Length: 394
Image (cartoon, rainbow, N blue to C red):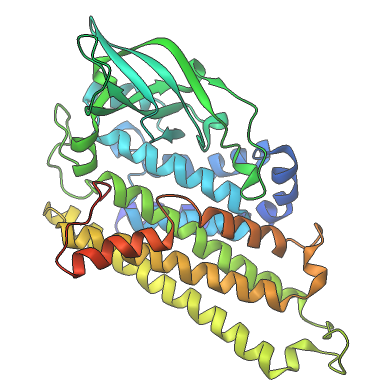
């Protein structure tokens, strides 16, 4: 077994052991609208935040499949924690596409949490040695516990009012003002508040062209062309996200099974719901939807790793298929959770029954613009029909 494989297995096993504690902290995360300090501390100790950092900087340099497995295990414990970990890991991995100087700054400690605001609701104006950044980013998942934040902006040159030059700037988390505006019914513990900056100088080496970052073609770095980790921005952000939905579906199934003994079906003569054929069939259906989602997960992670290992560009058709398969995997996981929730009876709406939180988190997160099943299936279907994908988010 190679060293990286051993390291990955060790972290995954460590996180799996934390699942009961993460579940126990789920209500606290929701109530405070941010992750309990204990969750972050335990995951740090497990090595989670070293997963995406290159070995050159003291990280574990784990392949995408291991990062996905880590996120999935976290989601078996707490959906909000998993969504934040998903953001921190994938964004930390994206830093490897920046120039060496930026990598050295961000990866300096070997373990790092990087959040991201990828909607270009800001501007950058060129100045000596870099840019001046102004703007705000909504739904900035993980910003409250991040070390750094990647934010999208449009470059304005020579006083122009409109620009199509999109870039991503890397900024220390300490430079942001964080609003207290995260009051939501789903993924409440993610603390995905609005972050903003005003007249902030960003050095040029911490700004990357969005198109180059999306394609993994940025230069001026030690690992340009290095095989194994150039995954491309959009698939790398989306695949660990799929793991959150699968992990949530597994959590729902496990919680239902643990709660089933001794529970009857109200207003019937069934004293054990687990003996009813409808319950059995529906639960098996949910389990198989999860298994099917896992198959789609493995299909896309294997494709990404194969292309990265061989330094072969992923085609437009393959990128569209990745989006379609992720979208359908999310749909299957969501359907599995909905089945379990419906089988659970009226008592499931109580806060003391965590299945209701798993259900709300799953349904809410499935509305995410980049994760919505219908949007992703449309992209896939267009390309299957020989049409342009009608999006540059590939």
